[in-house]
Length: 307
Image 1 (cartoon, rainbow, N blue to C red):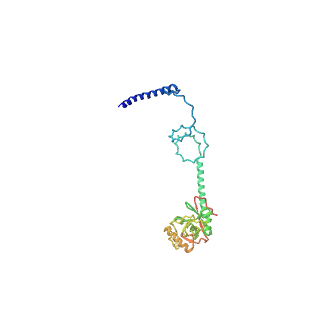
Image 2 (cartoon, rainbow, N blue to C red):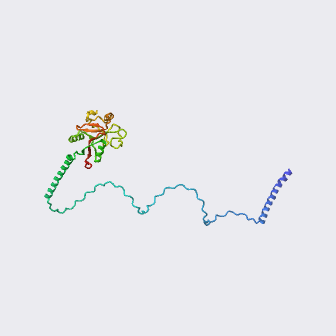
Image 3 (cartoon, rainbow, N blue to C red):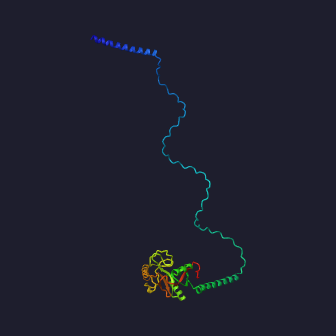
């Protein structure tokens, strides 16, 4: 027990000695040391002056596309350019408004109308005489038959079909082509007036491989045995075959039937050209036969050459 009390009394004494030693060391350090200890944090100072501009940095990545800006103002007109080529002609415009009536004209001089009427009347008489003389020259001397649309000339010069066709072309026409009953009747009457039995007309069958006879072998695209006129138009419904030709006289019968019959006749007698008789019938004749022929001219063209 005595030892415990003694220990308990020595503990506070040791604590006192320890604390005194520590304080003594701190006082000796403050007196002998040159070290300045930091003070308390001061207040914020004033903002300094703006520094110099720094160096330009590296170019950054491109930004996103911005919104479309507003349209700018219209600029000034530029210089006038060179004149361009003339444009195409425009459509005819509407007629303008009717203008105001003009003023009254001056009185005319007195005219001796009776004398001029007599002169004009005499001119009409002379013109009619000239027309009759031309008609007489055509019909009687030259032997030309005239209709509303065509002129027909009988050529009394025996030729083969190709030469006859070429002769009509040189005169400005072609071989006569009776495409209807009226034309066939006119040609028949003309043939009777001339006192001839048969003449070549502009109708033939297409030859195999080289087109029609007398057209230069151009090949019109018609099948062998197909009948075509001198202008290369196909035979229509009207025909005027003689009964011995194996087709209805003056009948139609359709193109298909006519073409079949034509091909059969061509195969039988090797005749590819057609003649017109004085009774108005058609008959096939050999193209190398020499015969008179009849030329046809359009009224829209100039007068035929009769030489």
